Image (cartoon, rainbow, N blue to C red):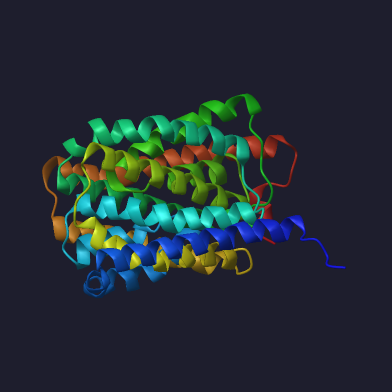
Length: 341
């Protein structure tokens, strides 16, 4: 008698069905539209996103962390194209990783995630309609650079404690809604402007305020960014504000990220966390220095470029201090003792 499939096997099947449907659709688009040459012309971004998609699934940093700097700094494209490409490619790669995470039952912070998605649903379309188009190209570049440099510095400063965290320090459950909505609104606005952001904001709240284990914080942030990418790319498409050049880059990179991001989500569950975080944090700081060298900001732009990093890290420290107080109030071992182990 044939053994019926287990629930775990049925969930895994859903992921493989998703991949099969996606690749059939991609092949149809390529063949019907005659885009074989387009893919050949855009091979550099496909190669870059092999690494970018791995980071998208294995870290709280979306594929745009690689895609945006490659397009803007290396290929010399505009910042709006970098944003649109980040949203477009993440809508495939991080969605694929999110499906894998849900199918494999990775731990996630469901309540906080749910309210974050509500905030994203409201803020991202509004940001695309009323904010993104009003920001000059150079400011988009600087906002991106500041956000991810701040994130990189956060990891270098708090690396030992972040990788030592286990479980979750619960704040009052009555605040999950307010915190989640705030994360969704701020992160959704950032995503509409630079193509990434909600993943970083949600992850920072989880590891600094909630003291969440990375095995929960990273999958939760991946799902949030996958949803924000879908909402963001849909909003810009509906508004007619998508850069037409994004399609060529997307059609070349999409088949890579569809498997690269889930691979990252799988690998991070088994490999040590520190090496990947050190590498990607270093890239975040490097792109900041490179971006400043290329844009050469002066006046208010320079003040923002420097002051923004200071302000972000000050906010991170405030969340860290509040989270530590909540954690220690539970009578558990302080994190500084955990890091000595």
